[in-house]
Length: 244
Image (tube, rainbow, N blue to C red; front, top):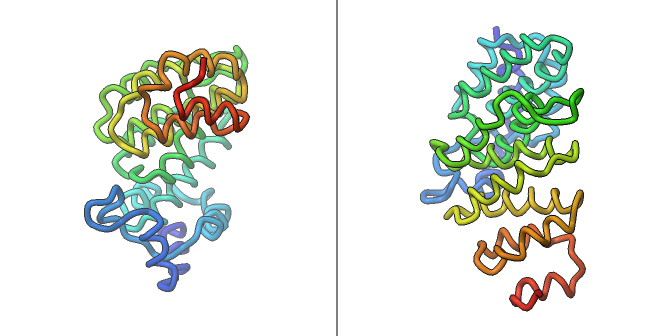
């Protein structure tokens, strides 16, 4: 019996399906094409995960991640996040969670699934809080940025650096942003711009220096996200390409 899966199915709400499919762009030709929804909103999913994650085995999580239902995959990922964080005194168990995550990236196939899982699991694993730096093959993120099988994997590469930013380490965010600077997909533009903005909250001067030679050629959406916290006059100058 898979309590996590069964509990999620019990919360299906047909009245919410149409709105969620519009929100996650599931029509033909859109990035979420083919995804299916039960109509369960995130707070409900989180409540189910809170009740069920402790009893969910890896086999049961695998069953959830193989589901055609978006919310069930999300529940599996959020349960994996809980399992990973509660194993912080057990590196072997955390490594098992990371390997499981990396082995099931095909299930992490929409922006919310990426953003709610990757830096919590992969970003945290790659960070060494005790040493104040990063470790454990950070090159993995660079490889995903350059050679990801899907743009979701490339989004994982940049969003995973959120955990680094939170600990004051910005190098990887700027370096991976350079790799993805001219990516064709809007969802990568948004993710890179978002992480640049977060890095800029830590070191605005460094963000401005990075933008100086790039802002005129980078995608407009990426630029808008990156400069969102700048004063209005500065934002206008960047957008009009009159910054000096």
